[in-house]
Image (cartoon, rainbow, N blue to C red):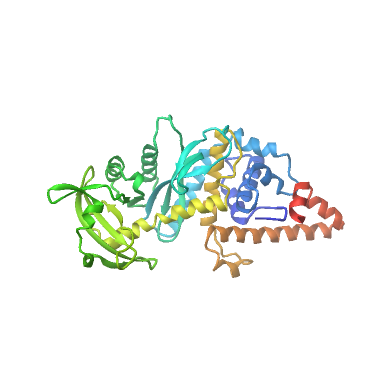
Length: 406
């Protein structure tokens, strides 16, 4: 993203450093700030690329050591991030939200990276090499943020559903206010729904068409059941974002689930498109409530896209599991800081109204760092340094020179 060398950090990262002064040494704080800044602004988000982006940088081995071997607590950093989320919730008087469960593959090319394995990627329709990450996301009326990330590994003793249930427990005891869990059909299992209900929460899930329900004294698949419903029974509903569906809903008994609320929905008024099914624990919930809750799940999809495209989730080239875990956590931290940071800065107020996405906020941070670079050059020239000397100082790395003037 950046073509100019970096001379400082975005203000939201500087503000975050003030709150963790006792958690890291000064050199470690500098590495953390540079890494977070690089994740937000650099086009090359590897350790080498981030390190080389800063004026007066040292050898990249120091930053590599910071991620893989330095003595600092990732748990402390995670707790500091979570404290910021809770602070925002309390400040905005948020009393309820939605917890979202999902997983995504962080694609890799090297077979010697610790924890890498072959996983089936539903979006690509094939098996790919990478890390499979189970994550949770918190969504409420005013913002959404990632909560937890854990890598699923075969033969670890924990499958993805067990990891998800552990994350539900962490969120339940965290102090975050939420009343419902949203998940796709893969996580729609009896163990998961019972676990959620035992924690006093409701749930909404996508539902495969081959799920069985008791109907008229026999067990039938949902796709067979929906064909018995007259077309005029499907009612138009409009969700909060303006999306319009035609839906039918009813409380039924589902095999291995008990009494649940089922919604069958179409996007086409003539019902010519594929029908989609959703299930919910709220047995008296209307279809519009169930679909509005499930629609919140889209926020975790946009998070995966933003984390991969804008924040380097898949760009880590480290091979050591300890460093890779820290990288994923710092991507979560960068995303959270961007989401929670205020856009109302005097210099950039004219941009803030139109920069609501993570990509837009990264651009806003780039504008802020451009100002920092200009001030650096002005200060250098005021000290009567020649233009050639300033250029040499700014573009000390030959790689930077080639990148900048290509």
